[in-house]
Length: 364
Image 1: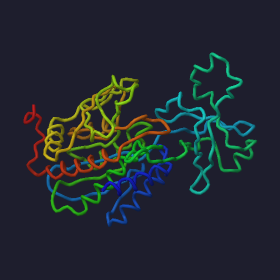
Image 2: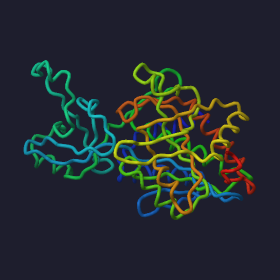
Image 3: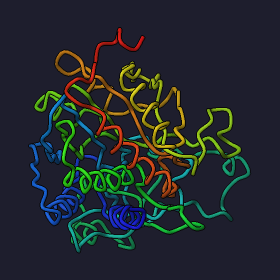
Image 4: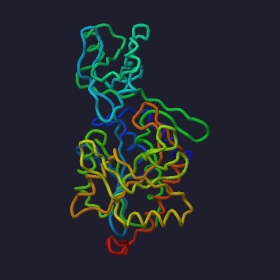
């Protein structure tokens, strides 16, 4: 299982898929599922979905395919590009980053976000974060005409230059671990669900627009009308010096369960999980001897926050994996956490049957 998840993850991390432009990622995942004999469908927004029939409450198990990045805002006469930010891009980590201007498969343009020459930087500038609107991208072309001849236009998607590498024995570092790691876990779940003999109906979904407006999954949920929604995404690892006060989430310490999330920065939304889901995952982890870590964070938001509000309300929970350096060009996860997350999800799904109660009073 670990080898399959590693292979899927590292392949998916190398495919650019800015929010709103996930099609290359979707086609890759669809091809993999097709090779497993699993039929998929795609809606108008680009959400990819596979259904596994069963008996009991209907479960929507999903993760997002997209990544954050940029949009070309302006092409200067000298060929330099100006960018607009898409998603929670950390401005202090941008200068000197390599990027990829996504023109078309086989025609993408490598570029770099310029960093002002050190010899010309004043003492005050050395300790100042440059706003993204003031940064510029060097494609190597020397005029707007050359840039446009390469296929670059205003509105073109731009991502961190796709990169992946292995750190130590089991850790993966690179671009878009958020949330290609979730995609790799769900691909493994698809293999397991395909061969199961019992369990609830499961809608396995790979969703769009999470990094943009968090609402791509909502469209799919409105169509599927699930009773239960389980969303897979990163959990903030807090085992580095800069994060120790934020919680007790350790990289390599096992999968995570969110008990509270709230954005708190302009978006009054978040998720407090349904008690039936908390009880299910706690008891399953204990039964399977899996170490289940707990998370409670402000400043974190997933697309589950909108899915939970569909129909008469959906019994929801955010599950995930510890990850370091979120939204940077070099995120880090541990393969063992992904393996245990897949095992936990599979075991938990097997315990959802026709008699599974979603009555809150049975748990509180």
